[in-house]
Picture 1 (cartoon, rainbow, N blue to C red):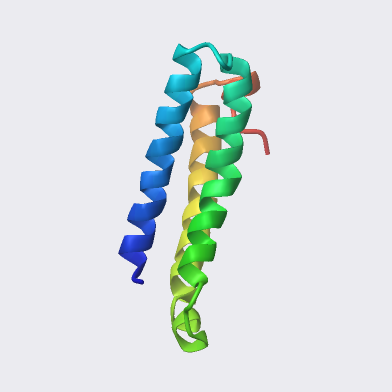
Picture 2: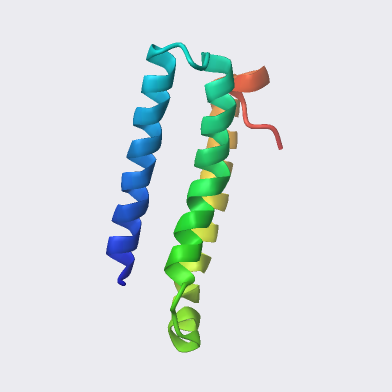
Length: 102
């Protein structure tokens, strides 16, 4: 199974999660506060873990070591995005929850 098919399958599951959330809100089974907690869990923890596990599953050690540069680039990207958001928070004079805290 290649990476593209794994990612499209996971994105498909994400779309199903979104549709389930819309249906649960419309039918008043859950309120927005409860659904917000569940959606934060899915987006921040469950979805990235599922993508990582399914991507690494069945990968040879050699292939995994060759893709370490991608993990390094992704880590640098996250650090740069954090710094950019921190600097833009200072630039736009944001306070409280609207600003990234260091």
